[in-house]
Amino acid sequence: MSAPAVSIAPSRVERFGETIAWLFAVAFVITVYEVAMRYLFRAPTSWVHVTVTTLCAICFSFGGAYSMARDEHMRVSSLTERLPARAQAFAEVLGYLCGLIYLLGLAYGTVAQAYDSVWRFESARWIPEPMPGPPGWPMPAIVKAAVAAGTLLFLAVLSLLAVRKASHFLEKK
Image 1: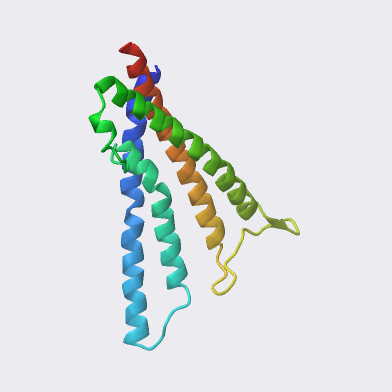
Image 2: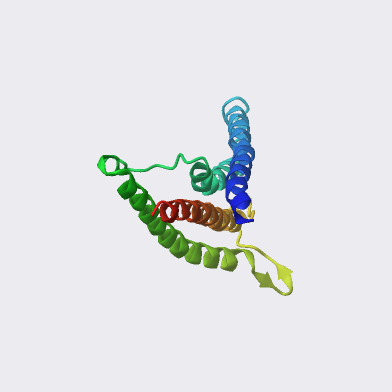
């Protein structure tokens, strides 16, 4: 039963990534709006820069998982390409293991920061971490939550791919 999950999960991550990438288009449109307001009407906004930064940060947060699901994540393969096939497979499994260790540490830190930023209550009211200046929206909390979610998704994709690669490596023994 686990084999279908391994093959289905990356395609779902790809669809999610392609959907969330539309936030870049939204960021572009509101940037054009800001430029028009600033230079044509001399009425700059206070919210566009923060919003564009947040939208792009959300997209970048999920980029690692998306590229890993498509098997397009950046690698330095100049050394491993010279190895025999079995050694290449072992090097790939080792790379996955190193990635998992890194992402586990990153997940630990990002989830803790997101928790502290999002789950804030004052006088029985939920008050996520706001921007220090105008417009006072909870952008830091949103970005920290997105980075944590993106890290966890990347960890899940890498785990599935590592299990698949390790099982192929062990089957060929």
